[in-house]
Image 1 (cartoon, rainbow, N blue to C red):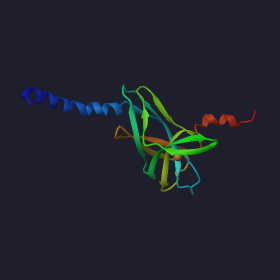
Image 2: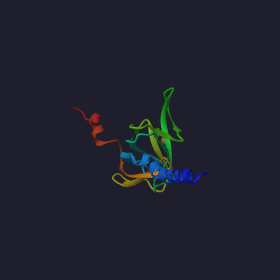
Image 3: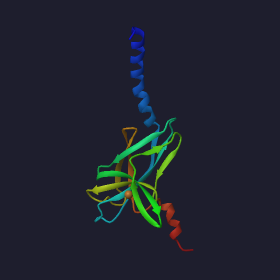
Amino acid sequence: MSQKSYRSALFLAVLALPLAQAAAAQVVLEGAWVRALPPTQTRTAAYLTVRNAGAEAVVISGASTPIAGRVELHETLQSEGMMRMEEQSEVRVPAGAAVSFAPGGLHLMLLDLDTMPAVGDAVELCLTIDGAPLCTTAETRRDAAPAAHHDHQHH
Ligand SMILES: [Cu+2]
């Protein structure tokens, strides 16, 4: 390799690392919450929206939280009137798009819980995005956003 091309190869190598990190830096985690279930349960689900403001797609390949032994990416599917959950090895978030983990669809399955969090508890939730952890604080709730409760009121 000539002296000149060696220098440009080195320059590219130094440049490549910050560029790779920049993709995940454009990702924002919003509205995270954990579903509170009876304390006898050893598993529950967490939900959030992953917004990718970057110019390239990013890949969610895993998740973790201090309160659970392990976390899986699941999708709830309807087939022949039955609900079943399927583990996803990764979830892709296209450039400029958002993916919502919400009841009835994608969710984070929190398994082997030490203790069920109580309503109001703050839970740290981390996603592995393009190989790097990105964390947020989830609120523990019994149900989706309080605004959804208007359906249950009688008029
Ligand atoms: Cu699940």
